[in-house]
Amino acid sequence: MIASIELEQPQDTDAIEALLDEAFGADRHKKQSYRYRHMTAAVGELCLVAREGERLVGTVRHWPVTIVGDKGMTPALLLGPIGVLAERRNKRIGDRLMRESLSRALDLGHAIVLLVGDLSYYGRFGFRPAAPRGITMPGEQPQRLQVLELQADALAGVSGDLWPVKSVAARTKVRVRKAPAKKNGGAEAPPLLKGRYGT
Image 1 (tube, rainbow, N blue to C red):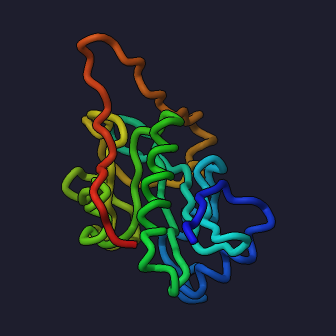
Image 2: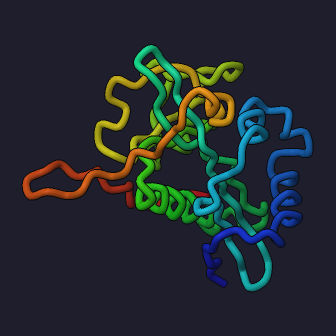
């Protein structure tokens, strides 16, 4: 059976939590990235699940964050967690969840996506180390933070620390930078990679 990719529904919460406990352990909430997620709500349009019939077999979420640096604040997304049931991890469900969520993020006008994970896996989706660009997540190992430009040159001049959106909302209203309209002869955002990858 081919899994369908759909928006997460409120009744999916228990199944998602059980899946993530299986994938990452019940102590996953102690991870640094969860501190960012506890402070704000996920982006509903980018919370996706994979289903095989009525069974939930995969999940991915995105969260609003801000890169705070000397040149100001830049809105971004923090991707994760992404998880797939152990028995279904050879079906490219994780790959499909990644690609669909990133495609939707681009359509919604988001420009920058970050995640905490291994470059050996996420590099295939276009993610690159964030540390060389001067982007850090306080409390996280620098080599674990990866970044992806959804829009061309979105990272130009951007550096600083990652902050949860709610922690800076009182000082400024963070807006999503919309994708520029296409013009004749103008540069377009690079397409998402289309190769075949693992889970």
